[in-house]
Amino acid sequence: MSNFRKYGAELVGTAALLCAVIGSGIMAENLAAGNNGVALMANTLATVFALYVLIEAFGPLSGAHFNPAVSLVMAYRKELPSGLLLGYILAQLMGAALGAWLAHAMFALEILQWSTKIRSGASQYLAEAVAAAGLIFVILRAEAGKASTMVASYIGAAYWFTASTSFANPAAVFGRMMSNTFAGIHPSNALAFITSEVIGACFALALFQVLRAQPDINQSNQ
Figure 1 (cartoon, helix red, strand yellow):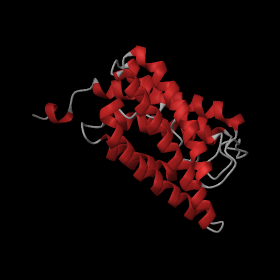
Figure 2: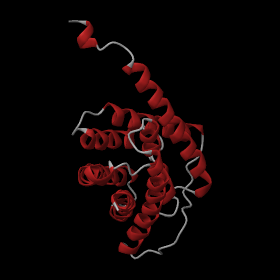
Figure 3: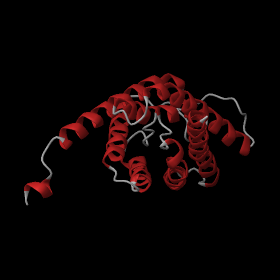
Figure 4: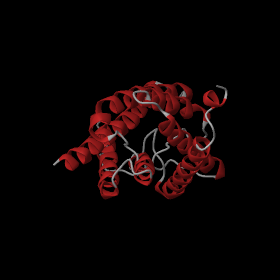
């Protein structure tokens, strides 16, 4: 039963995250009167606050991954038992879809829909690789008790310094392609985004291992 509680935490947490991302995008677009900068700022703030709260709330239950790329890295590092990996990913994907549908329901939109928002091109895919690499590196470097603040802060910044507005999460891509709203992504672009995110995660893991193998600066100066 403890494993099912972990899966449940990942499902509910991912659903809440996607609901916050998509719902705040809908609200922002409704209120921003066509000003995309204002809409993105509102979307960013809601995502940052939601991420912090959700990581704090669900971290003790499942690790608060909410992201298949994070789960893959943690399984590789043996911080997540390999037998739980598939359950985590399925829970995250299911949660992402449910979060999108919940956001639609709250704003009286058609529940089942597909995004028509094109996010294509080498610059977008590079941006997603950078976004995911930064996220994974921040998670790996975060000291105990600081992950929620560091992750939320990084994603908030990455919304603005990446051309893709930092999805950095295959589950987020999955949920957002089912939402024809401000935060959506056309299904034809989803695979390229996910591939870029996985490549970025692998790069971050390699970088973390290389840097960890070097002598600690403080120790070397003593």
